[in-house]
Image 1 (tube, helix red, strand yellow):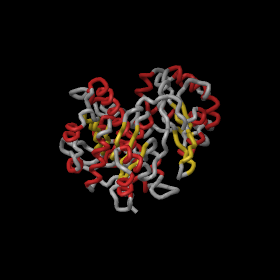
Image 2 (cartoon, helix red, strand yellow):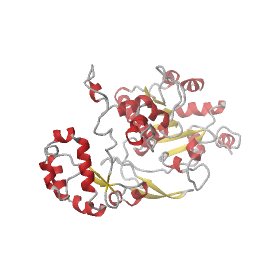
Image 3 (cartoon, one colour):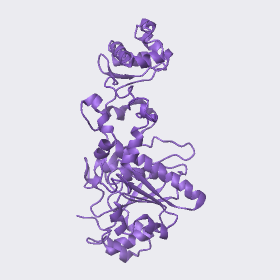
Image 4 (cartoon, one colour):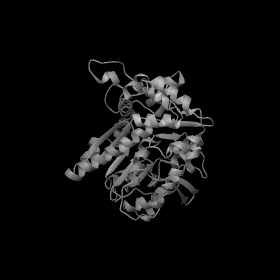
Length: 403
């Protein structure tokens, strides 16, 4: 956890008032890049603290993976003294990330117009399901709801026969990435102008745009030149190929890739077939091409294909399970995994940030905090005296965790 170089967001303070994954993941990305992230939690804590295996109460696995590089303060915003603490925190905040619905935020004085008047340099990021405008404004949403609304669940009919959810919280994670880079863009704007601004990141529009990168297809044009859907990826035939003892992902692309693959498979004559000979022909006969790859891949084991393909420039991978990743030879060769000692939770296996900046690299300087772990320190920095801090953090106080 030693840090040798200054990270790019050092000196930026982020106040995160968000639970579950979307907002907290955006906060974690900023923390990895050096921002000081203060996680303001209700007395019961972020809901994810209670999800997944754990060694201690309120330190569930789900919480541990999206809340590193943060400090935690408990503040009951339903109490007047809690609102006073919030205002003191905001006075020293560069970025606010919150996931409250606008009516609730307005009641607390957390709407953007109210805060912009007091803190004109504040970057105010509101993460929502649908945003505050339009027909669906204010609707609640979680990952499954947005997978359904954005067309992602329906895309799975090609493999499942009916709409299905992708078994990862992809809408939360993609939206969290969008929020992080939008905040950094707003910080760049502020660096040049001194001006803060409101940043809205609605999950539905974010995922609709994400899914519609390749799939507009004929509807890219007005009037349309054909149906929607990129056929090469939205097909049940697009899948890993079965080997004699496992599965292989394989994607020859150029003519030389294809020629070399069939040579390695012992079937060089396939490329003499005009249906396989050129890129245009393979695109026209894509299902036939996939069937031929499947037939050839099935003649060898995973190890045989690894031996044949590793020295070639043909894109391929064996199909890993999640359990394979901690021992993946490439990930281990780039020090992807770190075993770090948490002061209360013991040894944790933690992936480092995959984004590496040569002059100002991301780093892990804080492991996920216990609920309210930093309440006293943060209150002291806000100007509260020891007697006030003791009163606020005692059971029943505005900064006390729930039993």
